[in-house]
Length: 207
Image (cartoon, rainbow, N blue to C red):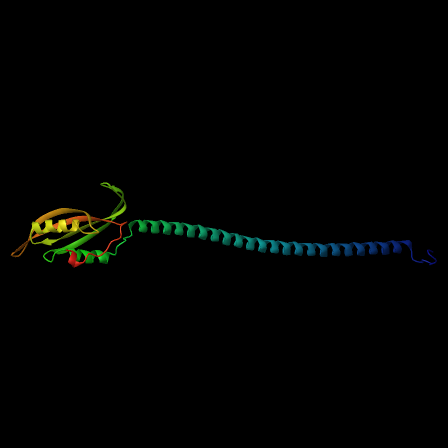
């Protein structure tokens, strides 16, 4: 008799009941622990998945930043290259239109002379001193053509020496050229143009 109750069962039955109760509690504890482990595993997997997603996003952002930096560096290089090209072009840019130069040549050259070629040497632009005149940029050019005789060529050289914008006018070669029954003098002459000095078109009246 215990707590005012009469226990008529043999003692072995009470022990078995207590064992079953303990086993049930152990089973419930095990089930609870298993459920907790499942929850922890799921949470860990979800956390890992979220971390991997954040890592992928971070890598994509890092790649975008690197790509932007590479693009910026390339644009800076292209701008610097463009700047150098512009500076190089400014060094050789003609202050007079080539068309004006052709018109001037046409107005100055006598009608008896036929011009065959006009060479403008941009690579001939140089810096430094020429005789006693300091110049920054000069254009070197050469013309070739046909004249009735050498005297006409000499007069053309003298005429160009007295005309702006022609400077350093010099005779090149002369040679006889036969075209059927017509014999003419093939010639060449060179000149320079000071690219720092404004130029103008020489009219026919100034010949």
